[in-house]
Amino acid sequence: MFSHIMLGADDIAASKAFYDATLGALGVAPGFTDDKGRVFWMTPTGIFAITRPIDGKPASCGNGSTVGFAVKSPAEADAWHAAGLAAGGTACEDPPGVRSGATGSLYLAYLRDPAGNKLCALHRM
Image (cartoon, rainbow, N blue to C red):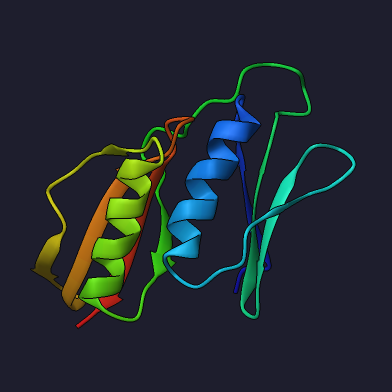
């Protein structure tokens, strides 16, 4: 459904280090920087990217917004979460664990990146 997701970041170096660590925990190669200063992580199923806002204003996170990354197992979600905390992310929501709801049981781990964007690693049980 999606071709790419791009998030704003003011400190590209800190955000790149964070995403290299968290996405690296999922087996994604380190991001590369293009000539405009944007950073891209390429996968067979889509592209994730960060950029300074093109309007020159500070980046801001979306209130109520979450970017979810599919993971293969609870252990992979935990590795993603730990890598993010070690690379400058902050924990948010409940600790990683199983949540049950209308769509079944999910293993969820939440973080905020250095720019404040809310992220989730999700494994469908």
